[in-house]
Image (cartoon, rainbow, N blue to C red; front, side):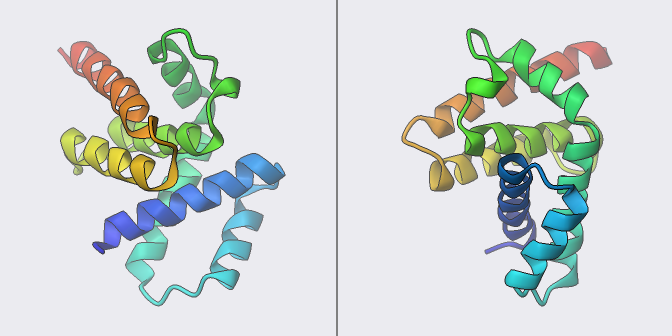
Length: 139
């Protein structure tokens, strides 16, 4: 598994823990890495940056997800899908060196692996709309 793919999966698990427990990100990050030994510092660094970035920009990201998710309320989304959308939206908005297509494809693959049978399509539709909206605003 590629390093960034592994980091994204770890970020999902940490964001899930934050969402479920309501604990502060630092506490969940520390607890996660204590329980899941990761030898690769690059994987940990990227995962932590996704978690902290998505958490710190959560209001902005959640607003964007809500606007892009026609007929869906954020709090009614599956926790897995919601957190995949959060870290992927953070990547789309704030990490310029990763091509949007890569971010979206990685998010879809993770949604298929961790979500339900419709998660891949759901995540794809919302991230595609977010990406198109970002492109329109950049013009």
